[in-house]
Length: 282
Length: 282
Image (cartoon, rainbow over all chains, first blue to last red; front, side, top):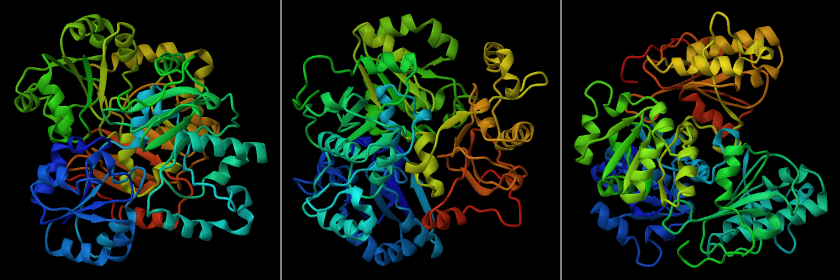
């Protein structure tokens, strides 16, 4: 049996009772290391926080390992109970569809244990999840690569780059994202620019109503969503660019037309005069 | 302090450790009764399953109570720790924005504990959450009311009806939803029909790419998503209409253009010849 278990967004306490129960039944526990594991106490002191909670060792599985050593994980799953832990929800921002497909083809039973994902947790800002548009990841621009030169088949090239970015990981910030978005908007004008951003890569989700944006467009910036020290700020692109959101992960919502109730809730997060700086506990 | 705590989708074991910790700190615990609480062991033997787990009594809060007695919940939150439990995620399918707004206006600290929502858990079918379109609830048609006669200001009338539907609750099924969708499509032809469905009411979320559909459109039907006996079937509208999905809650995804990886995953759920009937454990 292969358990794919969502850990939620905050820290080790965000696993569900069902998830914890499953981990305790497993002979082998892997944890995906694609996304930030900072808040799960994994970066500095190894895996100790989670290992202590689970009472067993955990193997860190980076993207390469999951792709190349999937056979090992799968053959172990044929003979025993294996847990594959995922930050957020197993089928949220990062899908683990490939592993599941391969498991199912081998006749291995797969059980998913759901949890919160950034895809639903952004609802905390008051915007109705029902009305959200498509989500995209925003890649880092480089000196020589911009999404606007996509005619030269940048996808392979950027994928290679993306791969190299994993060590050391760089996390997209709200500020850089807005900077890049505005640069593209200036270059290309129309909302077509959006499409060019739906290319690849890292750690920032733009949950966007597909409309043209500019410096005055209302956005909501999020950092460490679901953690004790999460930060949520609503304001124009211009204002949000000046906000220090602190440690990753960041994400950004471009706000479309709003309802009055949505407005009321957004007001609690709205930036007026002072630009907040991350203090470690907002 | 007012804690708004997501219970997740399955049963009492889907609360997170963080959520359980918060409930245990609270002097008063409410649970919203808008959505199905069947699987949480609340309908037949009162609140015993959850009360046993939490070690304290729970007050069932129906929609009327939350609307009319919010003052009581809020004044209790000013003096002590109050938990307001929500099936799914607090800001998922059903928002509790109004309660949060009122609390914040009174200066009450509000903490949300996130969990899985149907809005992200549907990703289990293999379709990329990033690419989902708008979500709508589908109301029950009646003899005299169809969304297509919306020119006669049906919204107030239907809201009144909607309210009456709460006792006894009726849950929309995949089958009725498809029947109604096809009826509207026949009447109105074009995708405009969609808009007429974004009107009100209960318990079925149509997560739809905004395109025209017909009997041959591929859909995915879900029942009891996140529960041990969840059922997921992919097939054309025509085929899914014949499937017995069993007990609520149901939801339906109308599938747009797919990627090969999405296809591979969908194949595991795809209906070919035999039409499955709910056996209580699929």
